Length: 77
Length: 144
Image 1 (spheres, rainbow over the protein chains, first blue to last red):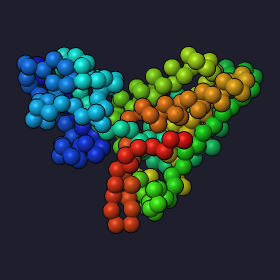
Image 2: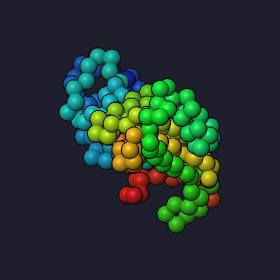
Image 3: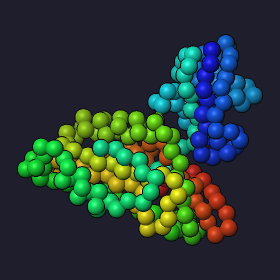
């Protein structure tokens, strides 16, 4: 399974990268994706996430080829 | 219409242009409501020299479309225009324009407010402020 993970704004700076590709079979949900990129830690409450450009949460399932994004609260307008 | 802009725009010229181009609406609308958000040169007690506005290309446009569609299902307006800046923004430049055209004022006024509030809470944009000697990410929007 291949997942593209993207980071934005302050989280992008904290992670030190704009995106990465995960090749893993043990990923079923957005929460699993986060654990894979953050040394097993659960998705923090203060981060938002999206799957294929639509808001999601830690329990949202992911499939091969999905784009999963993590970012801080939004501050537009 | 939804538009993301990488350079400065004049919201009032955009309004005139869009209204003149709207198909088959002349004579149909009796109310136009407009919100213009402009960059301040202060925030949380500090002088702000510039903003960097980041977005999530693709999702930002999709989320704005969802916001406009959801608002239109509650307030059946005739037309709407949403323009938002990204990139480097200087004080006094327009950050966002929301305009709604409807037959009567209640729909236009309420839809405009719902769209700008939902945009602030949901649309993936992030502001980074340049202060005199440092930079900082804005962590939350003001409540109103």
